[in-house]
Length: 183
Image (tube, rainbow, N blue to C red; front, side, top):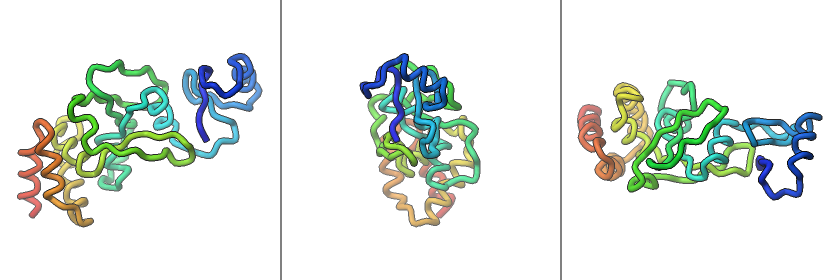
């Protein structure tokens, strides 16, 4: 199920959309974003982030939780966007992070938001772990270390993690230290 906005060319006029929302046919999930009232359950924060920014990418703690590499439950959806672009105004619980344009697509994959036809980006487990070490003042060193330990236990390849970490600023040294400690 794809969300529609008043500017979406679906044949529905803006006034018909608003009347439908008032009558219960459409459900407003955020400013300018509507879903059919009978839509299947989905993550509205992911939906809003992907509609507001087509390059929105799940990162840090939210990506760790997606890959089940942490026991911590994020209190907001961590989303990366390229540095220098405007941070969208959102109604959902979204924490926006600005990542360097040169390394933004490194380890980035697309995924389908469950229950919808909408696509959102997500960083690979290796990129996520490297970012967590790089931004350990936000995530916490212990969270990054524990995620690395779980990732290794599941068969993660240290060479692949080091390849990603070597391309990111301030990531290579803490990742290498953690791998040496955990080995």
